[in-house]
Image (cartoon, rainbow, N blue to C red; front, side):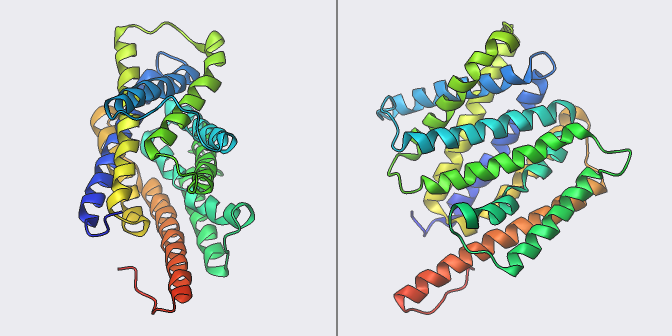
Length: 303
């Protein structure tokens, strides 16, 4: 990583957060005419095709089997379930509201990682998790007439994405190319969802096919930009900009669907985001401290 160019990394991350909501917009529009299974399947199939094209242009051996295939498959299933659940949520709900609940993933990671990855857990993280889930209740309002059960799919997507993040950490030492790993993830989703197309698929028209291809392109482009961002900046520098995705999603939803989140959604998102950021930065600081302690040098601030 070229740590001397964090501004470029941040710009790439912001660009990714602008691109990815376009994928969600395509999925929401397609769900009006096609099943969510087919929309999810097409997202992974075209994601695979675009990545094969990119890797071919880069002259990378995309056809090789992945390292640690079992863990790669589990990672692929986690992001496949995340996508399927999220698309189910946005089919009947505004994208910003569903996206706000997806951001519970750092809170879920904080709860499960100590058991799965052997990471530490303390009282401050527990309090951050509790406060974060209060934000979830603010958005859902389960005891009010405004409660929509279909929005729970977004919460399920947040849990699934947490497992995807933890599976990614488990694969961090697999010595595989990031782009190749991303291809294997997309291939796994395509293979698993293909049998369901027999009963849930329909022949798309030209417009539908073009939108499906665009959805796969924006998925591949967004993840490619994220990979490049981490080549120039650290996780602690980039993590606050993950939430720029909600800004882009809100603006697009307002322009295309005339939807603007109410104060309940903004308040819940603020609570979840602050809790997630605290956990992320606290974890990065803890890791930095342990490294500096082992090297017998003074601890350094994050900023």
